[in-house]
Length: 335
Image 1 (cartoon, one colour):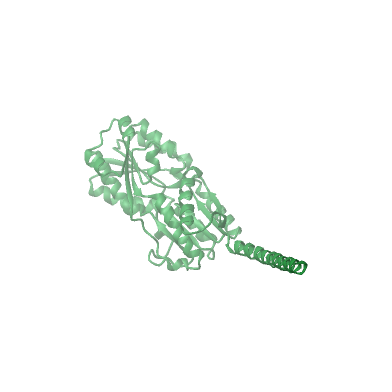
Image 2 (cartoon, one colour):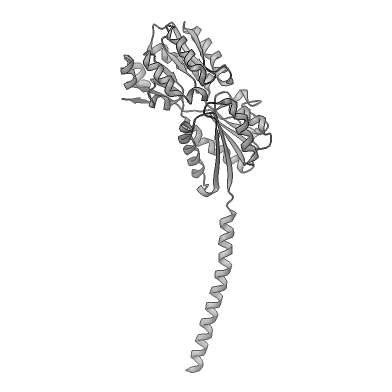
């Protein structure tokens, strides 16, 4: 009995020893597996305001999570100019100095140009820029270290003009709030000028290159008998979109833009790409680049989903009756 008890003790001791060794081996293996999940540093450069950028980046992060990335794997360094394009070269240089793995350009052609100038080595993924052709060699084969997506700003702009003409069939003049220093706005102005002629409309240009030019542009527009105002997605204008919406309300001027959020904020109409969807899909390109794909070989993606949004509350305040033909085509009507 005594001998059997001793054997039991010895067997129990051996089991305990083996278990302790397995535990010691398993612990570093688990730690190694945990550390094997690389942390990616993603730089974001935008000319927009922080307020506009936050929900878009939320959609981008969700896109990465949907692809299997963990929250702890994603470190995002954001630099935004808040509508001050002159700050973009410095901000781009900051991201390069941080040695990020990829630079994401958030809805700003000037930001894309600043990043292109700042680095030819770090991959650049543009998201929803208005004029990709101003940045890359070819939409089909961008070349270099740049790829991404466009919102087809200039290509879709004639559609907004048609919607304005349907809203105000007797219109003879419409105004464009634009920034001639933004290449995307230059392309857009050319497209609108041709479309305006086809609709027997005169296009009035209201130049706003920075915050100091809003008052003079608004004063000039107030003296013109324009039937509507077309607002671009230029970061300078979007950073101060509240001022634009207030001006349109004061002069009972229907305004249309390419950004749904402007209508949610009190604007009348918008027609354009679904920006949150564009940002969510940007994660696919970032994932490809992080896994070693050559950005220059990835064609610039174009949106396939567009939204038409109308704010009936704003229409009532402006004294407008929205035609049933427009209401029927709207993807969203805000009461």
